[in-house]
Image (cartoon, rainbow, N blue to C red; front, side, top):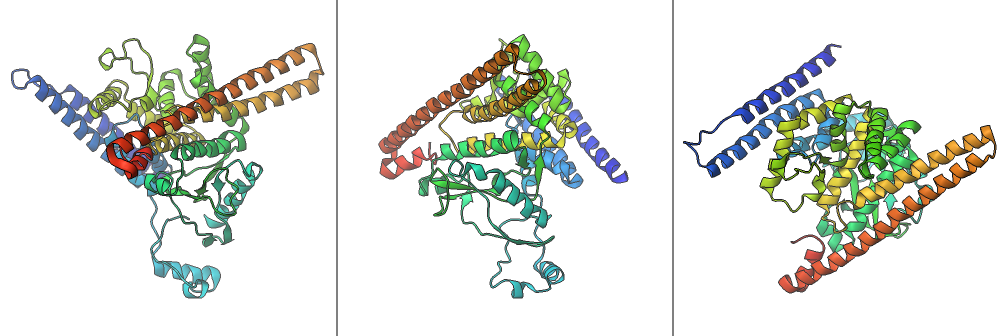
Length: 479
């Protein structure tokens, strides 16, 4: 109880100090007789960035010291594109909040657990770790389960799980995999790997886990994903394998949360209407107990977009604009939008409050969403910002279809084969087939466009930088 109180006090201090800091910063005035209009703009820009830096630093220290789930919240904040870069950069050190055990202690642990020293167990041992992990017997079980969950997709997925050689409570030996980070564009170019396909495969893998399997990796970040050329014994349909590491943390998703979240996601991509708006809020309450006033914050956390209705920001018609579509804006324009969101809606404090009070499984799902968006941007894909959203929507549609089919089966068992049942069955089947296959057609069109864009990039590089430059531009290494 005392520890919890200390953590809450530490967090409350950081949040309160940040609110005061922002209010003071936004209320600051610059007399017209002392400064020109350009000087005022530059001063406001400087003050905003300094305030972002101070405030993010306070929260970072509080999250780091609180540890546990607070670190996960910080990791989530680090990948929310709606936030100023000072915030996302400040939280990035939390992505790897784990430190290696000193070699003498590690050797002592092996003697106690295994009855042999490090030299006796291994012919060669590198004292410099390539990663850090811990809870090992459980990790081995998770790795076996996720491999079994994807077994029926052999030949249809690039996912590869390293083989577990042996595992104890504090000792785990796994297959060594050579590869690179999935967003290493030079590595992808050198091994002739299509970065668009990598992005799409990652979206498919995690969507399969969340919406179909109901059992997903709960610590997704760039360091836990490797890419390698397709191995000789691989069944990947592509020229590469996606290697998933660190299986220490997984979450199972209750059926109702999994299906309701899928329904919620589908409502987010539906056209705006009063009925759709009510449906969104209905499922927001079901999946996260979100009130109407907090709903816009949840939508921002999930999709990376926000309602920018300030005429000064060019949104006088009140339409939403996804931050994923703001790539062509310059830094000053983006900074103005993000800062206005902070000022007008208290976005940072609101998102943090939402994440702190939301079910932990939902927080981890949101983190997966952020990872997919961040990877799509870092891979400099050419298939369009909405491509991964269509993949997620297709998996959500299939999850909802399976649930609707189960409901219909239960109705038939209870009521028998009635005319109403047959009509409802045909309607559900028709709606699913049209929607699901319609998404696939749109995806094929986007993929064709993406290939054409890469060809144009190659030609542009050839014209401006020569033969080698053409491949670098096409691979996203140069602009």
